[in-house]
Amino acid sequence: MNIAHLSDLHFGVHDPAAASTLVADVAATAPDLTVVTGDLTMRARPGEFQLARAFLDRLPAPVLVVTGNHDLPLDSPQRLFRPYDRYRSFISAELDPVVHVPGLTAVGLQSMPWWRWKDGLVRRSQLALVDYTFAAAPPGDLRLVALHHPPSGRTLLNGRKLLLTGADLLLAGHTHHPDVRPTPGPVVVTAGTSTSRRTRGTPSSWSRITVEQGMVTVVERHFTAGGWRTGRLITVPRADRRPASRPGAR
Ligand SMILES: [Fe+2]
Image (cartoon, rainbow, N blue to C red; front, side, top):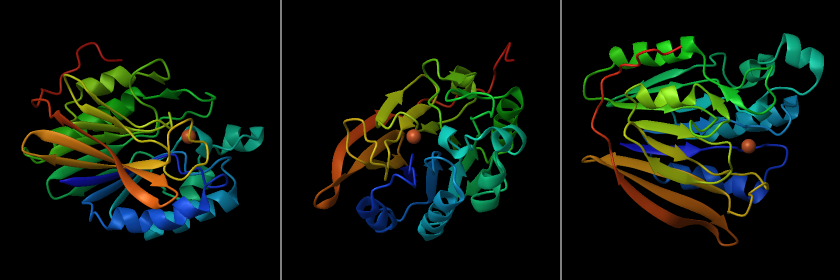
């Protein structure tokens, strides 16, 4: 199983050289699924969403996309009354998408409520969606959850409950810093920013995730002056499948 994980595209402040060459670099790996964990735009402007839409259309399908904190408009009336309208019209009508490919069941979660500024939230109904989807998945399927906010730290309410859903992989972004973190539950993969100039000390990157024979291998592809190059390679064991029990969840 081969997954391409991109994040924090930030069209509007993107690096045109990185954006124009990224699709070919991803396509060369022939992913079974392409995941984009939010922040498609910088300020949720229509022109930025149009650029993001054109980019997504060129990525290898199927593509699973979720919102990031930058994908909600800043201006009050729009944010208050129609926070997801632009995302829905340009990117995806479904905010919590479920994607099935042979051997893989994936759930994307919208983790950015309009009333928070930057930090995220996973609702109880979304945890129930993950439980329901995984319970109905074929027994041998790899189980994946994708959202913008990483589950650790204080930036995502209910994030730690995602570690108990029986997911094998949990994909996030937001930090602009690539990371791989094994847990007793899922392997948590955080992708860097794939095309933004806001790189925070690490180069633009995307993560190629391969799962085979009980191991998860993450290869970070870094954008350099010479184009996309292989950066870090990290291999961690995939945790044993755990029952999807979450006593006391709320
Ligand atoms: Fe971002």
